Length: 94
Image (cartoon, rainbow, N blue to C red):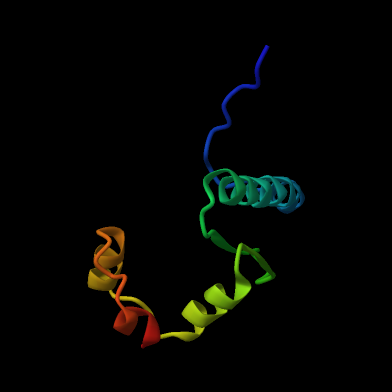
């Protein structure tokens, strides 16, 4: 018999919330690694805990650091990237 669905609402008990965060964080990191290997995809995952602790995974940390240090993308930048027209040198060099 499978597990039941969890209702998506904030866990009020701080200890239970932290335990759930830790367990789900490791599962999320595992899934990020799996999709990068199975699909040969560049994956970047950044998660901050409620205490501001950073947890990250990336297939290429230099790529992620470059984009984090760049100015934020606009909606039109994201739209061009999704549509595949953003693969010009100027887009990545700004």
